[in-house]
Length: 170
Ligand SMILES: [Mg+2]
Image (tube, rainbow, N blue to C red; front, side, top):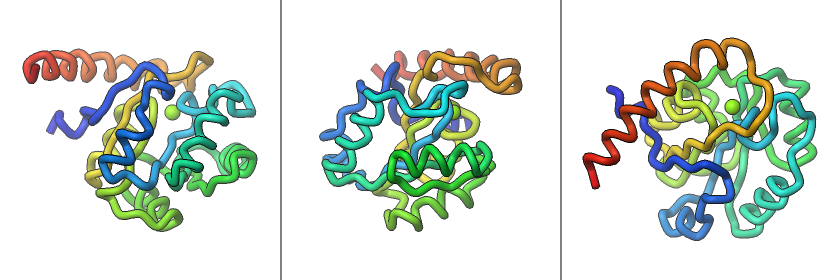
């Protein structure tokens, strides 16, 4: 059961993700979380370096879609600025929004990755559908109070178990 909370890949920064490796694994579509993954939660635009990195993914042939639990106005404005489709108020880890996002970019679960900063929404939701889940350390910035007070504390426990499991596999 706890394995559903473990990401397939855990990185400190988006820039550590090897785009060629994803392509070789057969990944063609990537579902992105928004807040603290590609945009700091207290900002209204995507940092330039991340925008360029996303463009590179698109040029490489990946189809991108944002899947966010945040409100329509914020999600749609940021998605429009990046030129990608989006699913807002996604209620992750519910499967429905991930399925809808895959429908928007026309990819099957086995060729779709999820990239996000939260275990209990992004990783759990993606794993439930068999997607390639990538956990990234959150961007610096203010967080939603419930994320800070509850989710991050529980994530610490899961990450501790995950690291122990990784060491055991070595
Ligand atoms: Mg997030």
